[in-house]
Image (tube, rainbow, N blue to C red; front, side, top):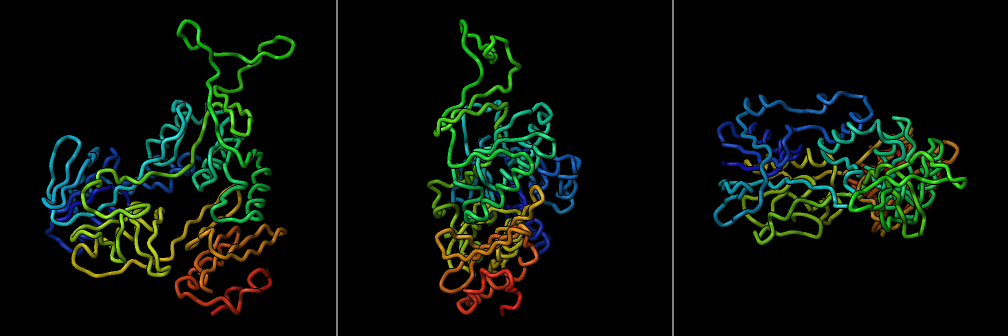
Length: 424
């Protein structure tokens, strides 16, 4: 291949299509370890809420790749890269050569717990299909973690009239971007929907409601004080480190991903703290090799540091830039990252770099259930966390991109009477 792309997600497919727009004759190949054509990961929750049909998840048909002369290999796993020979090795022992290479291999959900039969994730279409097939049998779920994925799980359950319990290690939800006041605003909203939140705790052990009799697992019923057998409430008994006991019949886990980098070990491609280290042009330390999407630890021109950003829009934009640059352009990647979610009536946004170690200013309007937290470094705003203040997002993004000095406005930022749109 003239251009070989590892990863069939939005970054990889966008890069391939961009390359085709620039180079009509180059031979393009995509290696994808999933068995599905490109689908929207951000629409998986809508599918699970019965708001869209499964077929609406798919963004490309097989014919689209044929028409653009892009060779797509599904269910193909890369196990190694030989930089000197410009070769990629597949698990089926096939060797593929390339001239230019894009690494957009994404990530896999972190391993968690031992009771896989009862555990649900929301990273892939296969995860969503399994969840969809079982959702009507779930009565008492436990949600682990305080991530955006955990928020998706909560709304899916509530939509199906199932009341979940949430277990989180932090003192409050989304502690990586909110302060305690913002966390309380979320907690109060959860309670309105019947969601039970148990904070500052984590799982110690998980035990199925069974005992062993001559090597056979048998359901262990619950016995009331008068000796009557009560209907089994759940199949799992979760014991926390705080010595709380939670009975549930399923566990929904939202604790992040491990990036697919194992095949690069020993290859010579430089890895950063969290991903494949690339410059502002998405180039690795190896000539002709680029990275985009969740695995790219890119140099952020706005913030002046390397970072990873795992969201759909970021992956799409990086795929576009990588495709252009692989065909000879020289376009830097520059974008104020943002992630927004509507959850149980709340609109929540993380914008830019919500660095918990940076100075921050908070303002909260409890009457209207609004909240904003501004992150400041060296006098400039670098990020913001918003609840029900989506209208301020574009203005804040401009302030972050232009690195506007906020010193003169610092004392007024905590006042809701102050309109940030007046900052120039």
